[in-house]
Amino acid sequence: MFTPIETTVGALLLHQATRNLLFQNGDILGASGFLRRLFSAPTKELIGFFAGMAFSYVPLNALAPQLVTSYPSALLTPQAAVFTVALGALIGWGTKASNGCTSGHMLCGLSRLSGRSAVVVATFFPVASVTHHLAHPTLRTEACPGDLPCYTPVYPSSTATASLILLAALSVFAARTVPSLVARSTISQTERKNKSPHTNSRSAPRIATTFFSGLLFALGLHISGMSHPAKVASFLSFPVLEHWDPSLALIILFGVLPNLVENQKRGFISPPKFASQFSLPTKTLKDVDAKFVLGAAAFGIGWGLSGTCPGPAVLRALAQPAWGVLWMGGFWLGGRIMS
Image (cartoon, rainbow, N blue to C red; front, side, top):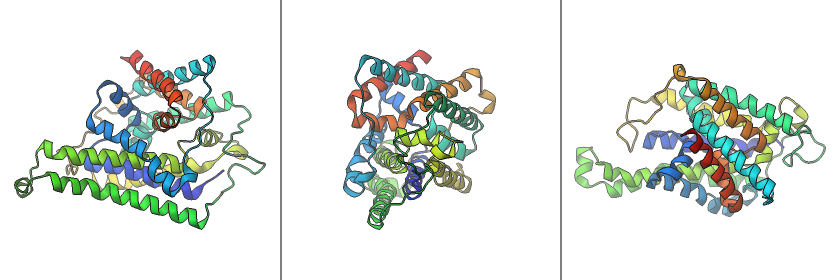
């Protein structure tokens, strides 16, 4: 069902996760790229990001347990195992070929007015929708039980809303303040006077930033519903309105648009808080080729079949480790095929 309150709060948390990482560390939040680098060349910052994602279950269970994503049972039959590995491989190959997924291209790329990201999003969204319609012709999902149209809004109680706002506010406050406090405690008095902190002095606040960006990102996925395969599937049921849950459209309104406004307002001339410069993609629309578009389409097929992309897959792997081993193994294998 349509969850305007929860998804709006979740989208704002996704905005905070991506803008914090960008304007504090100078990095783009790309879940598929982070995951691939975690397998091949892990760093303290990457480990910090995924530790933050894992930690999200703690405050969420404490303040809004009803919003912890409930996943379908993970079948461990040989056929199901092969299918899970194949889906992971398809998404792994597709995101490697197209250099990203929903987080890097939609949340971060569109808000930077990237032509390459626009091509990817314009490819994987319709492909995912068509795939979902073909693979699940009834379009019924557990996210929309009963006889009411799926676009019917449902609202949390006043108590649940208050807890949700408290959780979001505390998380954003911590993400904005803790890295700066860490920086003050690690940068020497001399460095502060010279205003030229060394790289080693920036390491701790950068790790703190990635941890809290991972925390906000995971909370945003849970609370918005983007980590719920059935809710994603219901969004992909458009244009059959009876089965369409418009919730995830709010991620564009309250996740991508705030990023766009802030990017346009601040620009990328002044360096980020804990880096000497931004680490932004250098390729342009001129670099788009057939393999790039095919990769976006492959990702769209995998997303349409399963309702799961790399960021949500991390959360599901934490909740269902056996499923996670299979999917992550396939994701790694798919990326290796591209190498």
